[in-house]
Amino acid sequence: MYIDEINLAIIRHLKDGRVPFKKIADDLGVSEGTVRTRVKKLTDEGVLDIAGLVDPEAIPDLGVVLVGVKVKDMDLVKKGEEFSKLKGVTSVCVVTGRYDLIVTVLLTRDFTMLRFYTDEVSTIDKVQSVESFVVYKSFNLKLPMPLT
Amino acid sequence: MYIDEINLAIIRHLKDGRVPFKKIADDLGVSEGTVRTRVKKLTDEGVLDIAGLVDPEAIPDLGVVLVGVKVKDMDLVKKGEEFSKLKGVTSVCVVTGRYDLIVTVLLTRDFTMLRFYTDEVSTIDKVQSVESFVVYKSFNLKLPMPLT
DNA sequence: ATATATTTTTACGGATTACGCAGTATTTTG
DNA sequence: CAAAATACTGCGTAATCCGTAAAAATATAT
Image (cartoon, rainbow over all chains, first blue to last red; front, side):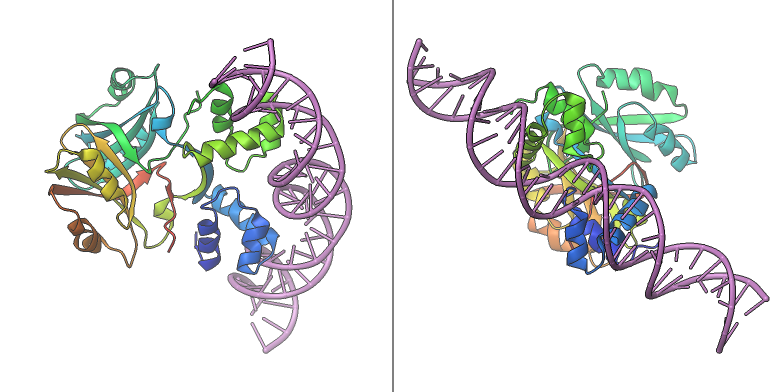
């Protein structure tokens, strides 16, 4: 999908996800309907997402761990997709360097790191190694709230 | 700040950042004003953020790199805060393990990895080592759009 | 180049929502 | 227990959202 200047400007305005489409429209010199149509298309195509995010430190019993993963498989992207479907996983990055994947995991009181490894990671084969980085303090880290 | 069940429910509803407060209110059995004031308080205190997020892969000339940082200083949190103020840095995690910090950096055509290291990281002292992980594919990774 | 099809934008009206404020209820504090 | 602070509700008004239909712009085909 081609992102033109108007779409970029719309996205920038949505730094505040609640700003009225009308205001964006006025700032950009287009109609409110145009903004609405474009936002809908951007979100439908997965380019844009307007969501509430939480600072995990502010929510009791919420923890974050980053996991560096090495896999035996050559198809890193496919493995990345598999990881992205595991419970607790908020995002997966396929990367260059020491690891193949860097996975962000959200933990709760009921869903601990142990559970993540024993119940989730264990279901994926050809995992060569994992290395955990427990986040004990963060800056500007905002994540979508898990449903439960 | 104490997060009660109502706030948790509000945050969960805001998975769609555009959902009307009225609808949240009806679902929760409270008034629209209550939802509004609570959302305001949560955002004012930095617990909640309602924002438009982009899939960096969908925006031309946008790249993401994760950087593992080891510092010589003992005060990791302070170093983390310093990093969080650098241009391009979207978030910083202070972690256990091989690195002290894991930094997420957003790159553009004008702001390359080289520039990030030479112009930004170099201004911070007592950095023992850095290790880059260039993200060449991601799943569910959504980041706030940089202003420029 | 003209005509046709497709997409995008605009305009507009009714339904819905956001906002401010005043009053009431609830909780906290002394 | 009383006073103060905080939180919640109800309501009127202004603004926004949303569907639809027409107009404009863009792309495609003959």
